[in-house]
Structure formats: C-alpha cells, structure tokens
Image (cartoon, rainbow, N blue to C red):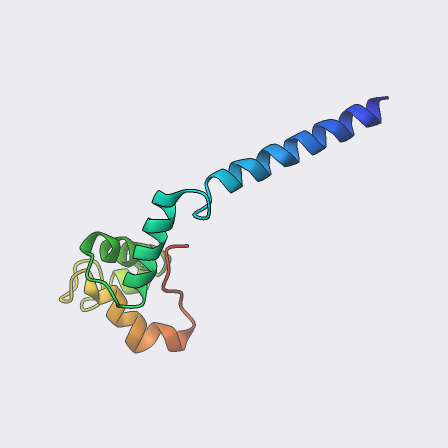
Length: 102
C-alpha cells in the first residue's frame, strides 16, 4: 500500500514539474516566443535592439570575467556593449566560448 502511495506521489510530482516547464515554454507562451526570436536575431547580428544586445553582452561578460575586465572588449571598454560581440566574433568563437544567454 505504501509503495503505491509513493509511486502515485512520484508520478504526480513528475507531472507537476513537466507542466510547470511546459507552461513556461516559448512553444506555449507567445511573449516568450517573441523574446526568444528577438534574442536569436540579435545573437546572429540581424537586429539592432539595444536592450537585447545589452542582455547578451552582460551574459557573455558574466560568463567570461577576463573579457569583462578587458580595456577594449570589457564592460568599461572602448567598444561599449558591442565589445562582447566583437570579442566573440574575433576570438571567442575560435576559443570555444558561448555567445548566448543560457
């Protein structure tokens, strides 16, 4: 009897976790889908949305503190928020660094 209760509880918990993830998915939430498309366009260099560019730059700098501290590509560098993207395109891609929010 106890095993059956634990099995049902585990199934219910798994279903709850699955539904929580599914409901916060871009496939079911138009706002998230729009945001994801916008960020993908910025990541590919096909958009000029400054907020999205800032988000990607901050994610890159947070992931790579050495780049964030750089005088040219960093947070206070000469290139501003475009320094992170430029570093990735010039060096980061070849070094195996990640240009994405996640």
